[in-house]
Amino acid sequence: MPMTFRGTVQALGAKLALACILSCAGGAFAVAQAASQPAKAPAAAETKSQVQAREILMRMANFLAKNQRFAVEVRLSYDAVQPSGQKIEVSETQSVSLSRPTRLRVESIGSDGAKVLAVFTGKEIMLIDYGAGVVAATPQVGGLDDTIKYFVGELGMRLPLAALLLSTLPQELQARVQSIDYVEKTSLYGAPAHHLAARTETTDFQAWVADGDKPLPQRVIITYKNATGQPQFRAQLSGWNLAPALSDATFSIMPPQKAQKVGFAAKVAPADKPVAAKGVKP
Image (tube, rainbow, N blue to C red; front, side, top):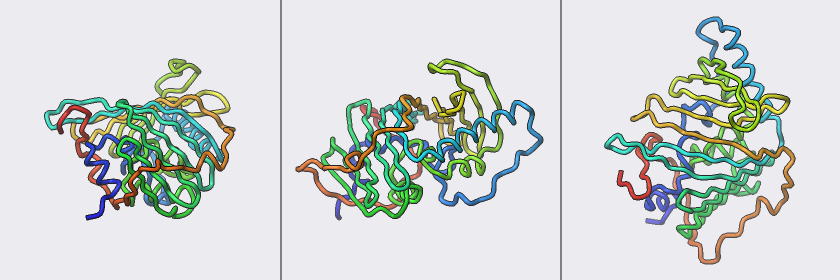
């Protein structure tokens, strides 16, 4: 049986699965397979606080969706729930560079030093697992939105904060957010921000959105309330650059000479399947 990139990752204990939570179906920031579904109306008339919170969230969504290029640093962590019920925190850092309509670069470094690089060049998807010494490539299916959905939905790869990278982010949130409220205004993360708390059918999530004319997300926490152990995903976003100096070199990729070429495997195991933390058997 030919080796696949997905199989390689799983054989390594899933440590390079690109961090499992936000690209999973059903989450507030998940990638939708059909973004055209109608928005869900609030169950009851919203209070002034709730209207304010929804407006802030949608202002953030529209602002991100309209930006043609940006770069951001992300520190993220998520709970790996063990069969015993114990939660093990798994973490990584990411450098994300986006250039619409077709290109994306995501460099991930795990807490154990493992490095994975994913690049959408405009013509193909390339993924390198430096620790395992493997590389996979496949033709890009179209624009950035379609490629992100294909990468997550068909190739079964994990892409945290995937929906924040879509030009359809406003529609994604409108279709999923069932209720939302304003918590407080805070400067906890270095700049004035609005703390929001919202609910979807399968998740509770909190978002800190910068105040002012650049409503960028500063932090996101998602609780998967229907998953075993109600695991959380946490991401802090910093160093936003809305005019990064991106070039063709940013989105080119040179695999290590000795890297083994493998294929992608279609589809992925259920998102709520326990993930093995380093040194902990699932």
